[in-house]
Image 1 (cartoon, rainbow, N blue to C red):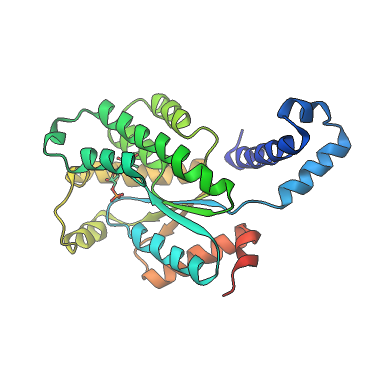
Image 2: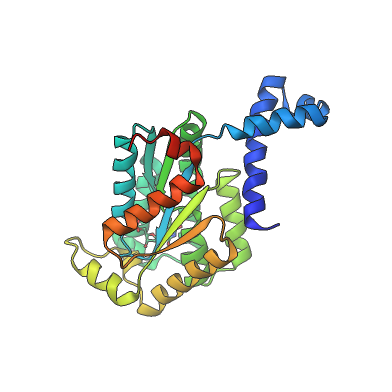
Length: 263
Ligand code: TMP
């Protein structure tokens, strides 16, 4: 199944579960699934929840700046939203982040442990923060999500892609991003931006250049594979321009955002 179809099916799945709640439970709803109820279901699907938006890219790509800008835009527009990040986003995840990135004994961490720690943080974040927020009608923006694992642990660390995919699926369940922005920058630009930050590089930022080349290539491959979800943006453009491009894309894809925006 192509990616776009998957997302649509997923949205319908959500609509069906909402309808199922109204009808009692999923099985009894399925039993009533004649042409009339299907039409009802389609109508419910027209009233979508606010989207789950993720940002991805290599170190120094500028995604955290764009996350902030988008959150400010949503705030000015009166749209309920929540910003989170991976790894982290709640106490368990932030402890895992510390271990993954800054713990002095982390230098000996093997790729399998690293993979499992990212997934552990994610499975907690999804259940504790992201799903409840989406269900109560909040737009969720996450600075990184499961694509980071596909790219960093799967492609760059060269762990078996099928295993990474299965663990990603296990961690997120049916909670998948509606849209993902990948900010694409060349290595030289990324490096020079990172040198401007005052903080010391963490463990994940100390890999050889080939590692980040793999990361960049893998993000582009992902976008080719899932063009309906993954939008690649030239991260070397001025921040304002990138911000406008992101908002235009969101407004075009999610009428619920465009219609709620007061700007
Ligand atoms: P950042 O959030 O400041 O970009 O740092 C997170 C680091 O962790 C970054 O180097 C990417 C890396 N990472 C992975 O390798 N796999 C993952 O699944 C996630 C979420 C992040």
